Amino acid sequence: MSDIDNINWFPGHMAKTRRMIEETVSKCDLVAEVVDARIPKSSSNGYLKQFIENKPRIIILNKSDLADAAATDKWKNKLSSEGLYPIITDCKSKKGLNSFFPLVAELLKEKQERLKARNLTGITTRIMVVGIPNCGKSTFINAISGRSVAKAEDRPGVTRDVQLVHLKNGIDLFDMPGMLMPKIPDAESAIKLAVTGAVGENAFDVTELALKFCGLMQKTAPKALEERYKIAIKEENTPLEILSEIAKKRGFLIKGGELDFERTAIILLDEFRGGKLGRITLDEAE
Image 1 (tube, rainbow, N blue to C red):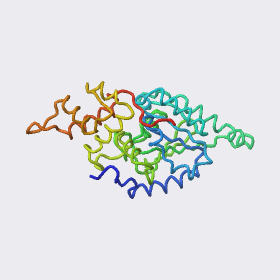
Image 2 (image 1 turned 30 degrees about the vertical axis):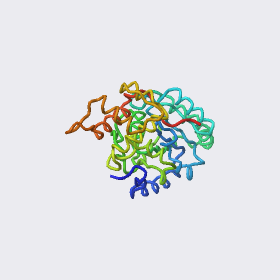
Image 3 (image 1 turned 135 degrees about the vertical axis):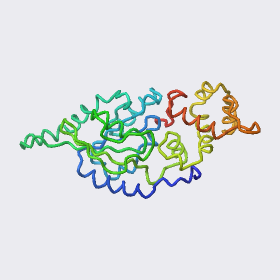
Image 4 (image 1 turned 60 degrees about the vertical axis):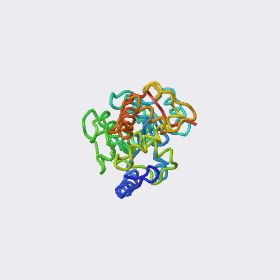
């Protein structure tokens, strides 16, 4: 395990993924990027802009059931203003997915008309589907295809190679392996990626991450912790004091009566990821 600020965000297989994405994008008509609606900025791979600027880019704000609804609407408006095409979804329940194919048709309408004018009908539409690890990309592909064609698990790094998925409506999906940015822009984004599960659990110390999460929540959504764990959070409280209060309320002790910080950390992160702290968005739409 390593310090959360010193995680190797760009392991060897990520370089391979980068090459695969660069090679595949030239074959595709548009790009669909799945992001975590709780952290739309932190979970979007800015590196993609280098080689997909000339392709229409749909942003799937997934896991919207776990994010603050008002904040998600603000993100949708912000992304639209940047020339992107966002849709709000919960891929597990398929909520919001009915707008995906109509949006694809709208974005490619002019191209299809040009092909039709040249009597080139029946041309397959190719879509590259990308996203960071554990953003719900495989769940999205399974949901819109209507069958289990992509491996979907609640852990990062399941998809390692390009998977080609043929849909009945003349669309091919290129399911790309999850890829984090080569360089995370700031420490706070790194924390957000870790707490939402984009990074494997073996990459960091869970107690250290929980402490950083407490500090983040103190700034963004302190009431969520107060209501869930029946504690009072003051501005001057340290992350350790907050985690200690949670441990006391839950009665998490180890031999000798000391507080069990590791167990508290695991529960805290699990409950955030499971939505038990409420609908929380950690990235603000500036």
